[in-house]
Length: 185
Image (cartoon, rainbow, N blue to C red; front, side, top):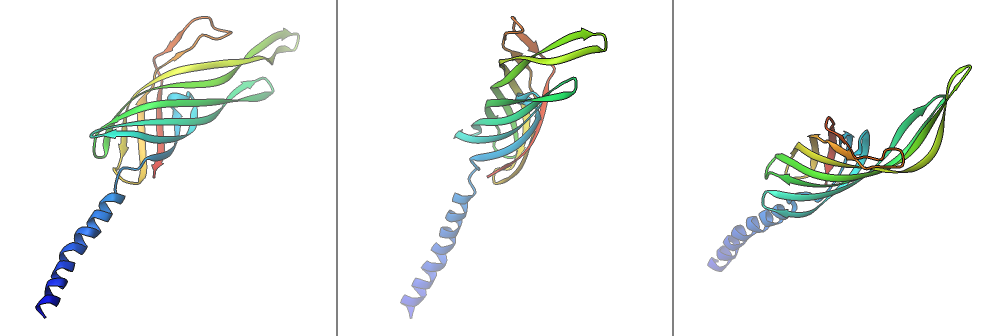
């Protein structure tokens, strides 16, 4: 009988620790995220996928890739142009509140808009298309729980416009921001 009691006590001691060990392994920080950002590194808006590729203490490094269509209205129609924002962000913080620091590269197709003055007014047409890009920076705040779930981010995102066919100089846009909502899994 004492052997049976000893086995029973051992089971009572080891089962809770086994169960908690399993639970802890599933409560690690999520590695993937999907989110919608208005403004931010894409300029107008973007649907993004992010992946945590490094975590050490209070610092996480996250790479993200997004997709967007930018609207370029001209007289009588709207031209939709694809944009691909890529960003590398460092999150600093351990619990729910994080500082975001990042840099990105947003490539997009730009078109020259040709305007002609006629007797009936101004006629606009789409000219040549060419590659253009932005280099955005990020300083922001991110609310994200340590486990799966929704997150919120807001940031100051100034950017440099890389010289293109139409603009021969670097242009710095100091006033720009973004807000995003997403889900970690």
